[in-house]
Length: 267
Ligand SMILES: Nc1ncnc2c1ncn2[C@@H]1O[C@H](COP(=O)(O)OP(=O)(O)O)[C@@H](O)[C@H]1O
Ligand SMILES: [Mg+2]
Image (cartoon, rainbow, N blue to C red; front, side, top):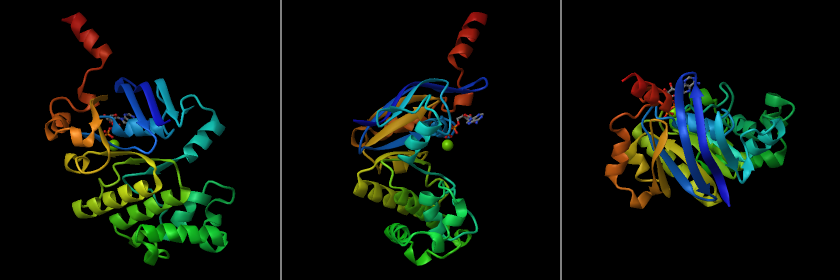
């Protein structure tokens, strides 16, 4: 069974053809690193996978179910199966680490933020949230206001929030791009460890080649809106990964098919 299936997905913003026929299949339990230079289309692909953006054409399936074209209810159900970790953590400011973790499980229910106040959360849930914070090494900071945490600590809290949600699929969009190299490495190691423990399926984008060659089972490389590389991490050489950074790498520097055809006609 495949956790994620993407068939011939296209996405444009106005004239800009960002996703140019993406094909990607990720079996359950596999950990895939999505590597590509800035502007190659990684975030747009990720947004199409977690339901935040709609492809113009093609199909996305999560655990065999169509995400593209899903109505509100199916979309909500599918999105519960997908945990998301963002570059900028996306924590709720001015509240505690524990509240942020609880928000992952309670925030979307009736009662909203009020119900995420630790005092209002059921005991059993509060204990699970504390266990998730403990797993990421942040139990001592449960009561700390997120504003006072370092970037690495905030990303750990965001990972704990995802653990409480307990999704089958985890999608991370450059989770370490805002961290210094040391904190970034530590967070990557933690992320890979916890997803392995739980047998989660992972798609994690990175723009740093050095990190991509160290983590995950498989590397999928994007360049100018297309997938240019796809293989087991151990079998992909540094040279082919470097190729993702050579020549035209950004979609806004690459003519789309329409552009190429028009240029050929006028020549
Ligand atoms: N909502 C949007 N509206 C217009 N252009 C966008 C939008 N989102 C992304 N783009 C453009 O799409 C291209 C690819 O961006 P993105 O998917 O963010 O790539 P990456 O994550 O690899 O850096 C960039 O040129 C970016 O400016
Ligand atoms: Mg991006």
